[in-house]
Image (tube, rainbow over all chains, first blue to last red; front, side):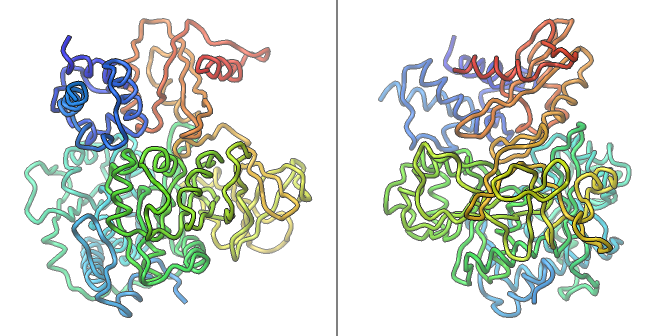
Length: 82
Length: 528
């Protein structure tokens, strides 16, 4: 399973994505549509840290890193690479 | 004396026309600009046929235009009704129908919802889009859509409408216990009683820069907006996502050199835990006010230690009275201390503790907090029965029209005259500062035809006061996804439980009721 689809599954299953799963594309605006709210962000962070063995610093907690699945996957990649 | 909410703006515009009034990112308006724009909007509303006392919806994300909307509606002699931009259309249509809204001031980015709102709200007559100059292609046909161009064409002088402080200024809809929100009616006097006190107590002046963090449908917003205008200070709108991203909140406070910040404790907890603050950070900040929920001593202590030069105060009060008591926190509490006091009554309000038999209790005894004075709401819109249950005649004075508000909060007066908050008399809880009736959520869950039984319980949480968990009994194979999709049609996101557990039946008490206590215990244990 690709990185994006793991994140996507987490949003559908654990963050209770309210729409049809087909609409949750990699560029779906997660913040704009409030799929990620203040609770969801922290659930997402613990998921990413646990699942991918990375550490997300407070400095990484910025909207540009969480606005889409694509952005989150990029953040994970950077953290894994670095 | 300043009696009216929009007088705060008008007087500052006369006194200091070129002072910055509102800042939204890179954009800002001076007092003169804001005063002129809001006159034009008010004149447009009058031309559209609004009459004094009409309710006008405000369906717009926080922005300069939202502030223009607030004052424009007030200047037309109307009350504004904030419609949460994130709430489901069904809930908004209920509010529009409930208080008879005909005109809605809105933003272009809400246009996806206009057609559905119009279809569900036969009484709607116009959408006034403040941030679009050109006609919009997606506009519904049944409702007139006016743009900023129509506002511009209006005269810039004040509309001739007589408003006094008894007039309705705002309706704030909050969670109701029956599945529908209830509209708290606030007069100009109700809100000004708090604003005047707060500006004086915290010495807000022309050089201050106030943050605006809470949504407009939250009563906290009244301090930021009207407090700044009354003092001739500037109000700075926090970016929408700053409450989710602590570093962004920190950046906002730094860049705007905010001097007075008013927020719910969970926002402050995130700031102190995840924004890398250290002693010396945020040098401009002088005052932090918090309200809306209990601030755990652990986090209050940490933020006070890292910001030693900032004064802190706990403001307490339900939407129905706005802030009615306050407590200045002078020393950081110990991390293990019980939550700090909610303090004593603000100026021009009287509070007392009443026992089950209706008598006033002496200090040391636990009872319900009653509030008397100019801040007590006018009532719930269109619901005199519900109003009569909590806004009652003063039981200790006869023959005077003197309503008191029963808060439903249990408190005890301590020997030093300050109150300790001990809990609720009913099923209402707080989460991230939002006030939530568990029955409201249960009613929405029951709307799904497959649900046989349900109970929503609150699990105490250190950072956000409470988390929500729903227990559902169903005879079908109702899936989580389907249930959540259906709930998100009826409830705002903050009311949708974070956890669901499906069971074949829910446990019962000996009297046959769903055993909420047992469910709460099992939810708490599971989380340990």
